[in-house]
Length: 303
Image (cartoon, rainbow, N blue to C red; front, side, top):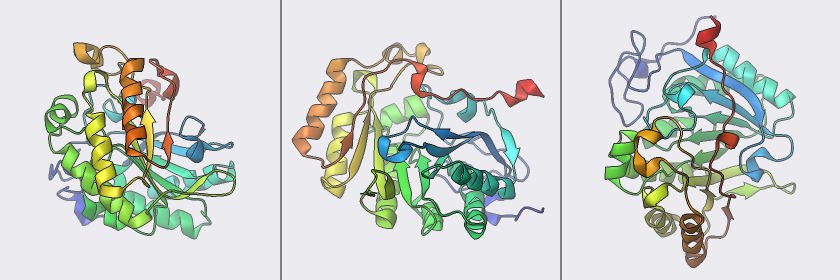
């Protein structure tokens, strides 16, 4: 089956990196060319309860990423590119298989670099009977104009808000403009999907749930981010305050990132949440190991 050719990939500017790579000839800044690459598609039980539920979230982990986070917990697929190529037709098939397995939703993890192709895959999957919610699980380093292409296709947006400060975003993720783009992306997501809606069995069906990973030493600017979100969206925006930081990837090369967060650091974040009065906040037990991270397949070693 011939894949559609997208003019947007001839000189790629679909994300804020604006690398202008011809992805039909080479890889972009993100490491991806025009071919979709995934690592695993699985029923995942490690997301927030309203996403994983009792049957699991139908999670598809995409390879490559448009950020270079030194502490990335999925670095083997985001930066080393572990994975295998799939066509639009095959990606739609994975979505339908996950639905058949009983998934509460289809959860697209790190999808930004394939956003144009994913629009085609979702359209095909829906024409073949996909009817469960679709989750866009991203780092929020995205352009609003690209997100507009997803309007009507994505039910739930699950973005990160990683940093409040440009300096730390540049040092640890290679994107000084991250805070500005993340906020504008989340605004577009909120315009499309609104507040989080949860059905009678406790599963999210529509809306926005913003994730924030608390980093050691205040590097993520947690207090500033929580205040900013409250100022922009009010207390009704749903949050997931994550305590699962552990030194992954290249984090051990940075002394300030070489240990997990302390109880005092997380408690300070919780106190800010309480003071601001957010209506719905998901919290975690502090966990400084890889227990939350799936085991990814090194397909390159199997060739």
